[in-house]
Length: 154
Image (cartoon, rainbow, N blue to C red):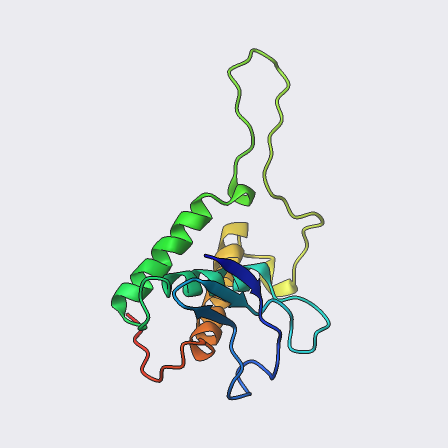
């Protein structure tokens, strides 16, 4: 990618005819990502921005939204997620030291709603991930900057 920059949020995602989440120009010569919210008061979620980036990177190889495009997009996402430092398990050492740092990502405070008290952490995380994935994929597909009407979802 020659240049990765911000796409200024003109219009409203899903409402304005020319509003897109990302744009790939000349097969990666320049990729623009919409990182600010429509009201300019904040930033979009990192997961959403990353998914748009994976989508735009797949356009470096495939212009059409066909099966090969989506397979490449998912492979890019898998490769990037496997290298994500926030998913690490900390440091390892072969030293005989009894104290060792264990890193990772943690949520402070805990808590949750009344409906979530009977579900395991794994079940809650799974539910939340599926909800985000569905909503984000729909938003990305509806607002792809490639300007094509026919879209194929495998």
